[in-house]
Length: 111
Image (cartoon, rainbow, N blue to C red; front, side, top):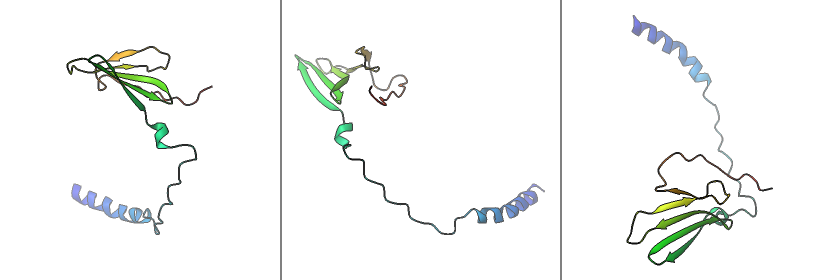
């Protein structure tokens, strides 16, 4: 009995499924080029490597503003990160970039 009811529902749904199919498919327009003045190089962070004895520091900057430092201790120790998440100069240490939940924080505009 259940199979008969299922078959009737499927038969009733066929005309509805045929109506939702578009008749003529058109290709999508080409992607417009980015606006002038915006390049991929402006979005890439600038990385500066500084050696302090055996300690290696990698400084990450965007638009000249330092936002993260990766510190590798001497002897190939486990690297850790110093992150300025608010942009106010308060640095927080993270042992790994995989730990915790990082809430997206983008700068929308400067006033």
